[in-house]
Image 1 (tube, rainbow, N blue to C red):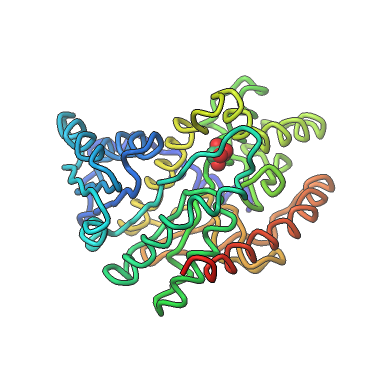
Image 2: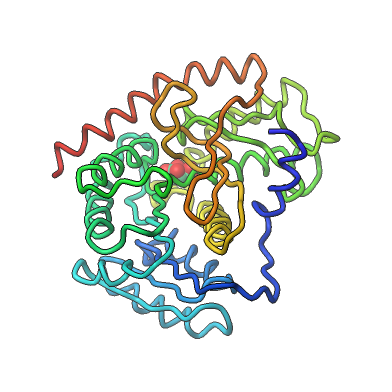
Length: 341
Ligand code: LMR
């Protein structure tokens, strides 16, 4: 990406104040797993988005009803409607423009994200069934780990149900971009909002590849050693949080913030703008069926996935190491369908 293209899209990616913007159409967003730590925080952030006209919250348990009550005590933003239990899932999603799966069982210290597939695939399966049954027009995003495997898993299911649309199915990996910006900003002594770092690969300690050599704006530069150190930190960031939270949770606040940044971008896209945001999608350009990176999205979904990003020798080396790992995780997700269906 040239810095000209980035400077066009960066404001859209990073914008948070929505001011008094009047949308051309009503946008309805569903958060699935809204009673969890991540889900409730995402819901609170989306409640502040004036472009969203209706917020649907779903969870398996009735705690979500209390969360909805609370959110409706906040002035402004979209009205919040809640749905508890499997039988309400279809109603929670059927008229939405954007459905975001955030429900998950968090990993414990010592676990990898990859090991969470057995715990988290059943929720994705239920949602895919509901999407196939009730809503095949929405943008559909999965932020549940392991994203690297659960997006291929959801793809295989939606394909089986006859309603797979590669342009509308996303894995949410924006947290890696948020962390890459935050770490660079702390070294450079500037605001992370003023920086852009493309991040490619997947979402795990071995597959996330921040491209610090592409840091923009170009007056901010990191040397190779700084870039390699920050890359190690970005890759380990989620695991660090898991270890420090001592088995009680994984990252919830920054993850919710990054999911909301992704939701803001997709809401803008639904409203007719072209936006650039980090996500994991069908993308064959790097030797694996699914790949994460800066992706251009419009009203009908993906316009262009990442390809041909310049990178340093070290970044290229990391990418080459990550591809076989990512391929294995993709195949694991696709094959997992046969264990669960
Ligand atoms: C993260 O990166 O923080 C999330 O993927 C949660 C986790 O398990 O690390």
